[in-house]
Image 1 (cartoon, helix red, strand yellow):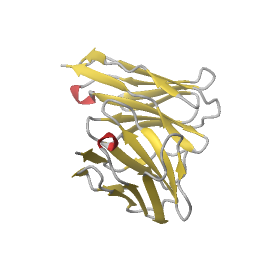
Image 2 (cartoon, chains in turn yellow, orange):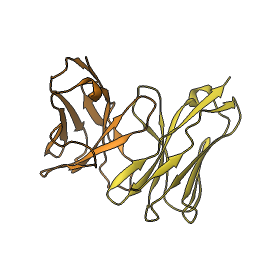
Image 3 (tube, chains in turn red, brown):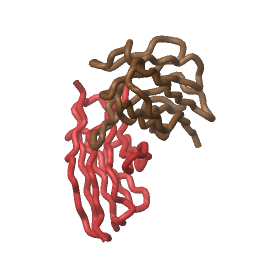
Length: 109
Length: 116
């Protein structure tokens, strides 16, 4: 069974701090990696996608991928209360997308 | 951008009722759509892959006779929860994209199903 794991949290950070979210996956053949944000009662929305080793930055968000370690992370700089949500790591595995259990982030004003 | 529409957004019905949920790709054709179920404070669990013009592929543990999937056109997939019971109450979400599995999925807004 292909798996994606995340710390469930909750992760609490003060406003303006850096939030660091981590994800590991079991399928070495995975090619595509995504971070989604999900507010309570809503469907997920895409934050970042990353396909090659290294860092990818988009505004306050930076995704990091290390395929050798089967590890992908998301950094949120200058965290805002509006960033409070559950962050889902998703990984493609053969013919489907596997989601991690999500990390709940709370940004404290 | 690509949009996926899901309807209805909320259903409340009695036990034993069958409920149909629609998932439409509004501005692209989707040969494949995915159906997920999400329980409170849990992650998305893939239920099945809906394939246009052929049978759906169900994940292990998902009853295909309970959760009927029909993907009769390139823009519409339906999930029917047959003879629903309270344990079927959940948040059901569909997704699709127009550029293959290695590109991000576009999600519908989800359907909150409550069985009394």
